[in-house]
Amino acid sequence: MSAHASRPADTYVPTYFLSSVGAGGLAVTFFMYLMFWVPHPGKPVPVFEDISAAFATGTPALQGAIIVAALGIAVFAFMNIKGLIWNLGQLSQFAKTERYTALRNSNAESTLLAAPLAVAMSINASFIVGLVFVPQLWSIVEYLFPAALVAFALTGIWALSLIGSFLGRVLSKGGVFDVTAHNSFAQMLPAFALAMVAVGLSAPAAMSGNTATVGTALVLSTLFGVAATIYAAVAVFTAFNSMLHYGTAKEAGPTLLIIVPLMTVLGIMLVRQNHGLHTTFEVHTTAGETMVLLARLLAVQLAFLGLGLAVLRRQGYFKEFVMGPKTSAGSYALVCPGVALSVMLHFFINKGLVAAGVIAKYDVTYWGLTAIALIAQFAMVALVFRLNRQHFSRHAPAAVPAE
Image 1 (spheres, one colour):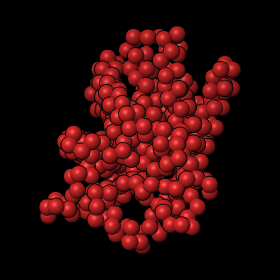
Image 2 (cartoon, helix red, strand yellow):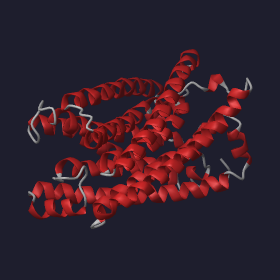
Image 3 (cartoon, one colour):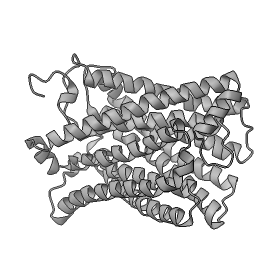
Image 4 (cartoon, one colour):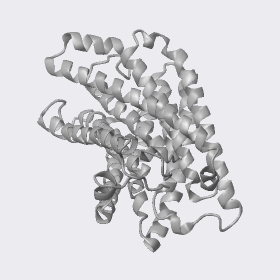
């Protein structure tokens, strides 16, 4: 870090895009209140009119939840867009430096995929803001879906071009990929970016009534979803080999948890696809099948959550980089797993257990399980504000360069 730089974020790395992604994810967690607690008959998601009606006629508890949700969505969507704009500006300046040239010739070139990941998240978050705050949006939604498909497809093409540049370089000639530095799940970032594009592309499949739109959304989201799955499998297996040899890179420890948001994003994609297949193409998935699908994805999340937290605790990561004197842009990777677990639990409880009749909506078990999702959500709210203070405060400690 240069002597005159006054905050860690002044030593820019593309990983800072995860600050924008995390804020966007938190906006989604607040939308879950509206998604599952506000009645929205005849529509797959609640819109401004449904929310207004529920607020006018609902119980004080529901009214309170709607107020918290609306505030949460507004605050974190603003932070998401603000973070995206700041990062895009910083990236354009960073691209003119020698550090950028060095990054393009190292394993860390894959961190550039944080940019399309953040853009895809911001498109998703913007759609939520539209649903919640814009009256009569649903009346023109069939015109918005093709535009959304184009936006996500262009973001996906950008991501694929960056992946092509990276893989083309490391696979065309030997010795340019440092296997000793592959001892984390940092190389999962491209898979996460492709999955975020896939879940965005799947939204019109669940929400549109136009057969061509639904069909296009199903095919495009499948293309990116499958690509994300293949890339993730390769990255995980090769990284495990390196981690067994060299141990987990301490600063990249949070990447061990990246499987958690990947499962949530791909899981929502599958639920959306199944809904589109059901409403448009008469392919019927039972509530029990959906419950088991979500349970399997949740099981993968819990397995990798346990692994990641065990390694992070053993390495003293939280003591050093979150509560302690050191800073690493990679710490923002801790936000996504907590957000993703919260969202997955809401889906598992409502689309899984309640829909299949295993538990009753709003009974003691329902609120007991939902409390876990809420605790995870508010822990991540606290973490985001903590990290923002650490990295963007003028008096923060010196940064450690991050992959």
